[in-house]
Each structure stands twice: as C-alpha cells, then as structure tokens.
Length: 146
Image (cartoon, rainbow, N blue to C red; front, side, top):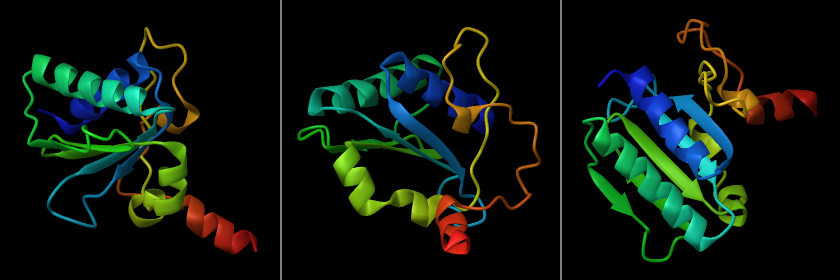
C-alpha cells in the first residue's frame, strides 16, 4: 500500500475515535525498518484500546497488514505495527514522559485534510511540501528559542 494512503487511513481511523494531538513523522532517513511514526493521545485506557482497534480494523479492511499490536491488555500505551508505519497511542502523561516526538520528530509530515474530515488537526494538513526538505523539530525550535 502506498505510504501516503496508509498514513491517511491511519489518521482517519484515529480521528474517527477522537484521538488527540495526532502527529505524523517521516522516518525514512532514520531507519530502514519503517517509513512513518504516528503518535496520538487517548484520554483513557478504554479510548487508547478503541483507537488501536480502529487503526487495526481500517488497515485490514483496506487490504493492509498488521504485523503486531502491543499494550492492548493495559491500554496506557498501545503500539500498532503496520510494517511501513508504527502507531503509538498513548495517554498524555506517558506521552509527555517518553517524549517520542524528540526521537522521531525531525521531519513532520503534513497531510491534506480529508474532504469529509472538517476537524483535521493543524499538524496534519496540506502535504504538498517536498518531504525531503528538512523541517525543524519542535524540540529544536525550543532549544533555539532559549
């Protein structure tokens, strides 16, 4: 499956269950294992589990593969591995503590807002930029501002 189609599918699945603060990062330059890291927050164990199930179901329905899912039993941090994309669904306290954006966030990806999704997040809109252009990470911007 095309990576842009896969990332749009995953973001749509997350938005369907009201995920918060969805971020998509291009990791092709960091590792050959996967092309995207997608990070989202859920407000409870139940919601993080539902978000992961939504991603799993939508990817499978579109003909994609789910390599593995981890953390569903507890629900504080659920990881969904689709092969080309890794999805981290975390509760806000864990997300802040582990700060995965610092590790993977060098090249944010901006997606076109879906036609039916009026509430698309600002971090995932209008991807017409060349993905090879280096974009500044939020952590780097904070360091420069100090």
